[in-house]
Every structure is written in structure tokens, then in C-alpha cells.
Amino acid sequence: FHFFWIPRQPHRRPSPRRPPHRSIQPQVVPEPVRVRRLPQEILIQAVPYLIAKLRKHEALQKRCGPGTASYKKALRWLESGEGVNTADSNKDECRYLVYISFRGLGNRMLSMASAFLYAVLTERVLLVDNDKAIIGDLFCEPFPGTTWLLPRVGWLSTSPLRRLRHFDQDSKESLGNMLQSGATIASADGNVTWSAPAGRTPPFVYVHLGGGYGPHDKLFFCGAHQRLLRTVPWLLFKSDVYTIPGMFLIPTFQDELDAMFPEKDAVFHHLGRYLFHPSNAVWRDVTSYHRDNLAGVRRVVGVQIRVFQDKVQPPQQVLDQVLSCVRDEKLLQLLPMPSSTSSSNSTSTSILVTSLSPWYSERIRAEFAGSSTEVHRPSHEGEQRWHDAAHDEQALTDIYLLSTCDVLLTSGYSTFGYVAQGLAGLHSWVLPREPFWAEEGSTEGRGPCRRELSVEPCSHSPSFYDCKAGGRDLDLDNVKYIGRCVDVNWGIKLV
Ligand code: GDP
Image 1 (cartoon, rainbow, N blue to C red):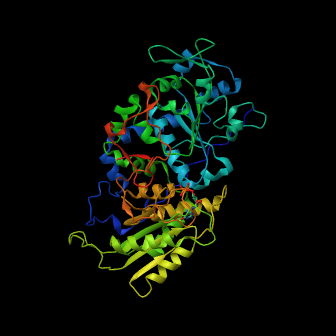
Image 2 (cartoon, rainbow, N blue to C red):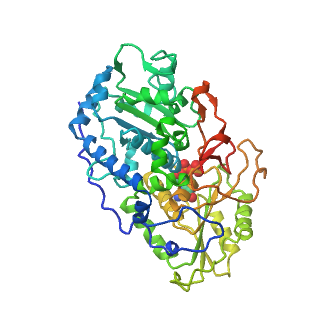
Image 3 (cartoon, helix red, strand yellow):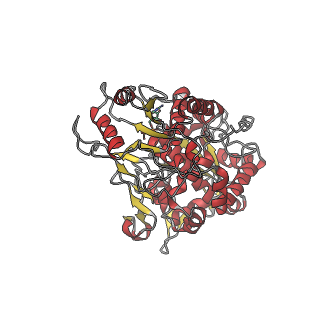
């Protein structure tokens, strides 16, 4: 049997939605920044097609969400474990995507935004697995009048929703394994259909898009496999990566994506600002820290330092890189503001340092002692922790504080930094890091900071299959909107 949670009422949306920071004032910037941090009203006018899609999606979430008759019917399909009559699943409009998260908060936010865009494109209801209640503690409900949190499933239930955390790349229900095990038939014209029994569709398919996913899992990014998945009522979608660049390579989605995102390098910026509303507790922390330390400061430089090795002594090379970048690229330099927009005579500058280790902010503070630049550190958690709501709330607070800065200096490879950059709508300066295989203490790769090409996150585990050419890689030089990342040489991103 099932017992349902009573859907949570959406949290009261904090107001104002963004901290009232003076950086909303237009400033003269060294290079043209195509995406500005604008109040949401202005974004709404900028992309009416996207807004219309989002409104339509909100209606779908409400019509088919937990507690509705359609949801109960779809749950019964799942419980039965039997194939669904394809004609029925075609007829019924309510189909679901259950997002299963793993890894750190940056990974989770990037993959959740990817799952959301996929749900919008394929008209599926997005439900998130609220394991340990962490997502519910971090974010407000994004869709009015319904919940995006997957209701708990009763202990005795045979539904696959009971064992979401057990699915992985080896699961026999994964798309990759089903394609290899004869569960599908590929015809000569390139179409793929479910094999026996004829006319029936599995009630669910597990889609594994985690880092290191295999070639058959990557067939997800082919048009024929998208058509195959279209009739499946439930997709269980586990991912820790930003898969949106791959969606731009699927021909069936391209016209829609073009219309939704005239500016290709602002996809995460729009989706992230729409989907992620920090919970009231996180928002209180963000706004109070901002009010007490950053409000009224003319220029705030956000520095995000992410060191992946677990060392007792944080690497000095990273500090050197940060200081050189701030000085060489004149990140603290105050730029003249057009007199018509100048509302503050303040000449103060601040550096906001986020890092697990307190050592960096202390050293940077010592470096700027006696100058007019203040150095702030909202947290120093020491080490990354798992399944710890308070730790994740602090991480989200840091990300949002970074996103209010005027300039960002972020760490290469770090999804934490990508999210801050995307929400801010800024082209960060990026600290390159040594390759993972480099010797301990090596300075290889730790060169000067570089300017990001686009506001978009880098996709670390990209799929750029040429589906027509039997799975060979596409020649990306001929693909519109996709470029290489400045920090990860095998990564791709929207530009
Ligand atoms: P990535 O590993 O850098 O790609 O970023 P993730 O966000 O996926 O994982 C890193 C995790 O470490 C975060 O989610 C936090 O839990 C923690 N963490 C790393 N850097 C910081 C930081 O600057 N501030 C806080 N509060 N937590 C951090």
C-alpha cells in the first residue's frame, strides 16, 4: 500500500528575491557582459517563449502531481511491474521523471536543472527524491499549488520507488542495459522499439547519466532513443552532471531549445533562477550576511577556492594564483559609473572568500591589511560532509552570496563555482588546476587565471555522439553553440 504525504504548502517566497545589492546598477565593465544580473521581471520580458513554456509546465505539475487521480493511476502501473499497453500510455498525458541526486551540492544543482529542462522538453512531471529531507530543507517548492518532492512510498510497497537509491549503472532496468539485453529492437530505418510483448511499454526505465556513464547509456542523447522513451510512464533519472549541452545536440529538441533560449550561454542562468529558491532559513542567512557585510560596498570580488586534495596544509600555489589574479587583472579596481546611474559615493571594495579551509581567507586578509579592502568569509566548514542538512545549507548560502558579487574568481573543475557563476550571470575568472594525475605539490597546470568564455557550466562528462554515425564522436567544430571549457580540456559547454 501507499501512504501519501500531504503535499507541503509552498514556502512563502522571501522578498525581495535577490539581495538588494548595488551591483544591479549598470557598471562599466572591462569586456561586454552579455548576460546581466537583472530583476526577474526584466528576464520575463526578455524571453516570453520560455516564460510561456514554464507556465505550461507549472500547470502540468499541478494537474498530474502527487495526490491527483492521474498520479495514483501511474503509481498502480509502477506497482504492477507489468508492461503498459503502449496505446494507453500514449493516451494518458501524465508521465513522470524522478530525479535521484548524488554527490556535492554543485553537482546536484547542475544535474537537477538538467533534469528539469528535460522534463519541460518532454512534458514530464519532475519529482525529486527528497532523501534525508535535504532538498526540502534547502529549496522552496518551485511550482505553485503542488509539490515537487516525491511522496514517500510505504514499506511494503513493491514499487521501484522504494529502492531508488539502489539503482546504478549495473541495474538491469537501465536504458544502457536494456538496449544491450534485447529488450529493444532496432529496425533498418534507425527506429528503436520495445521488443516482447508486442505493443507494450515498460512501466519505467532507469536512466543513468552519472559521471563515467557507458556508451549505451549515452544513447539517451539520440533522437531514436528519445522516441523510444517517450511512451514510458516513469523515468528514474540519476545524474550528477550537467547534461544540457548534450540536449542541444538532440535534433528533436533543437527548435524548441532555440526558441526558449535565444542566448545560449544563459540557459543555466534562467533555469537556475527559476527553479532554485533558497528556503527561508537559507535566504535569511544570505540576506543578513549581505546586509551586515556587503551592502553599500562599491565593488565586491567573490573568490571561490576549491581544493580537491584532502591535505592538512592547503596548497600555497592556490593562494599565489588568487593573489596574482586579483592584482594582474585589477579585479579590485573601481570603474567609473555613469553619472546618471551613480547612487553611491562609496569607494570601498571587499573580497568575499568562500572555501572549506579558513587558511585562505586569513592569508588574503593579511595581504590586504591596512588597505581599504575588507575581506569577508561567510563560512569555514573544514571538510565536505555528506547527508548533512546544515552543511548543505551553509554551502547554498555561500553559493548565493557569491552570486551577488560584481566579479567572480572561481576554481576550475568545481561545479560549486559553476553554479555561483551561472546564478550571477557573470563571466568568471577561472583558476586552472593541475591535472588529477599530477605529482603531489606539482605546479603543472596552475597557470594564471583565465576569463570564462560563457556564463554556462562546463559539462564534465559530455556526450557528443554522432548518432547517425554509429556512436562516433561529433566534430564539435561544426556544431553551433558548443565550445570547449577553459578549465577542463575534455569538457564542453554552451557558448
Ligand atoms: P565540486 O566538488 O567543487 O564540484 O562541488 P560540489 O558542490 O559538488 O561538492 C563540494 C561540496 O563541498 C559542497 O557541496 C560543499 O558541501 C562543500 N564545499 C566546497 N567548497 C565549499 C565552500 O566554499 N563553502 C561551503 N560552505 N562548502 C563548500
